[in-house]
Length: 396
Picture 1 (cartoon, rainbow, N blue to C red):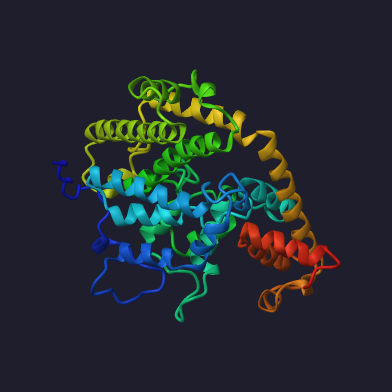
Picture 2: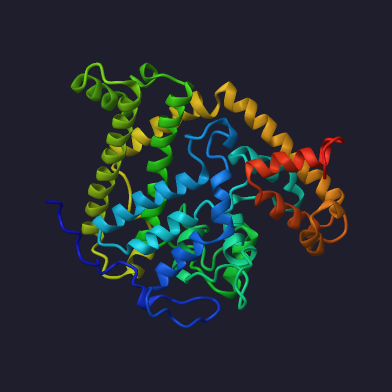
């Protein structure tokens, strides 16, 4: 029999104690505030578009590689399981996990790099800031507000996905904070100099667990590297070795799945053990104690952090910089650069509803509108739009 989940910890976020929403709303009779946040994210247009946005491989390269959507679902599953084991609020951890990638551009980090370079004179581009724009402005579905009007706790967890944005400064130094987040914080302070809730910290490390292991899975299946190449990689090499010894002659697909499954399990259990040790040392009595701790309470042991760095280094060299990935990234950067440059210079080529929001060619207002338009594209739509705008024989 599986062990029973612990009751709510004193430092868990409680929906009935939420700091609320920017625009006040009546509470639901059937769902908590955090459950409604999760549901709004799942029903958003930006979430649906993640199905056709790159994780590493562009969407048309294969049906079984991760996309931003499948990655977000996998992160949410890991985050919810960890939150349950730690007595945290599962719905909040899940909401932060599902929403953390909504601002990603088409073609993954290659698309983001291209937009960041193109917008250098206008403050650059950050997918974290773009995620916040999606959540607070760009989703236009509700009659009473723009964005999703999520609770303070979900927005805090999304903004501080990687920790404080302006550590050690009170109030936060706005020059170090992305512009959309900074503007929102002036009207609705998010405590940017503190750590987020334990639920948000769990979601952030669930992200690490998911993409490290699933990129190994995708990289092996794509033939970018072989199992023998992992032999000297900490954690991965020993685990695949133990599976091979325990199941000689196992078919490769099962071997890969079993090895990845065990790696996720080892990382998750290491996180639980180290986090419980930190919590026992800190003895927090409320979520505010977590935010004021001055350091994360959720984390890996030093040994696992070393393994994590080794895995990332291997993937960076053997997968993210593989010539096949580089070639696609090069194409992706050109597509994004071409689209952005043309539409900023000729905003009259934007679809009607987007053109209505833009200003004159080359102005800051137009740059922002074009960035939002391009960032929201799927890989497939970006390639089709590029054809429509640059191929003289294409139908517009």
